[in-house]
Length: 341
Image 1 (tube, rainbow, N blue to C red):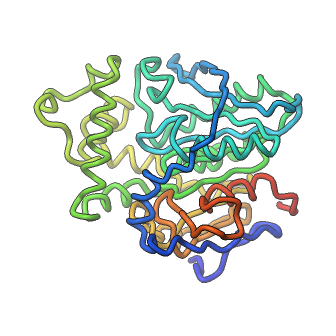
Image 2: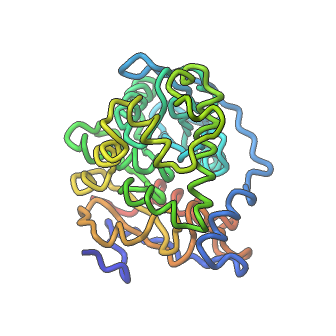
């Protein structure tokens, strides 16, 4: 069991402390405020779109943003969004912009059917599609054969990153140098069941509605939508996964999908230096998940005392250039010159 009063450290790296905004001192406020305080004002990304084919023939879109002075061999970073997100999610754009300012080329992935790739995939994305990430990494390696690669996943994307790093530990390319998973729902069963109890089921209904709307907006998926959903959509994420995600993706049930797709079962096998960043008051991913894990030396766990789920909005005038503490810890980890295993 991990003592969360202390950080599990990798090499000499250590996160700067988080000082939350004085009006956002609980997890729900941090989580909800992040949707409105985008921090994207003034960000302009001139992206090149790549269409990447997956093992089963489905395709997805990734957006490529390179610094003006980027040269072959310079570092690149692959970014994966969370549930109901895309390449234009606020955190994806903010962090891509900050990476570009520091000379790193950023590839923002749209998972199957998301963002610019909507309509390109027959099958929907889900938390276990680590083989898709493997295909993306191979594509990026071919495009930039001399570059070191870092991978960053947020929420559901974080689970995908951890799952890939763990289950493919022996075959992860040597050019993959570092990784980050922010607020990853590493035990999908626990996290999904917990949604029903939070704020009277607010989060559960919210995500179920977004997932249903996304399915309705994607013609390839109309044949998968249960007939009973024509007059009413699913009320819970569990219902969506039981009746659509699991059967379409080839799982026996939602429980089978959660068991096979949760990164918790393979985190112990990760070899790439990885930052696992979460908060003690994340309302969607209980910190107790990480208390029960046995982490390898390659994984650095940092539990912020506050931050909610993908929030981490700090007070102004802090030590970071802006109030988005999460962004700067990702940047710090990826650009640190301190030794790591």
